[in-house]
Image: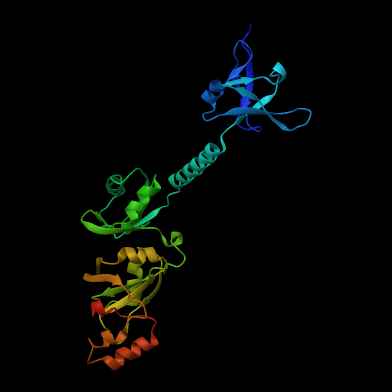
Length: 298
């Protein structure tokens, strides 16, 4: 007698699997459970009534309807509690899978030393996890670093870990963040304006503009009058501005210091106390200007 197989599926819409029957034409429940763990029986759709019917089960043995399994597809039955538990497990697994496959983003690395190369960046960040891409932004004409770059990781968890801390790269503290286009809409945009301290009186706005254009597009240069040994430079890209902060640059043979320009809401009176001889003129200057002089650099 040739071996007989019946077609069994977990759901009517799924592709069935063939399960072997015994010599007497019955099917052992254990044979079904071996392929469908947790199965407690079988059912099928009656061709005449189109209703679902259960297959008779006696002491772990399934008996063919009317002694003939036919060419029907039999659907697996599960205990209700077990089915609910399986659905919960599947849902939990889906959440884990979704978390595991969250897409990573390009992260901006601010404050890079001028000497840092892309290989240096890759060597450093590989200690956190697999790196997909690194890039040091450079001036197209000179090839010099602009003081910032980008990195991207394979794993989202690695990205989160890197953002959560500061990084010592080539002897300097650097910050690794999501670019402004990726951050929460409620997070304030970083300033595009920098404060240039220790300027000399012979530096003109055109000269400052020309100098800083090597790092990115400059939208405005402001030197206060009367001269106060500082200036403000505004870039089109806030990332360029932030990358320059903390640097000491040489302009016309003079070392100037770059830092953040403070927001307008800071208390200007702190600034005036440091200029007792020129409060009126300084107040007039700020009254006409959108610029603020950071008190930490007075």
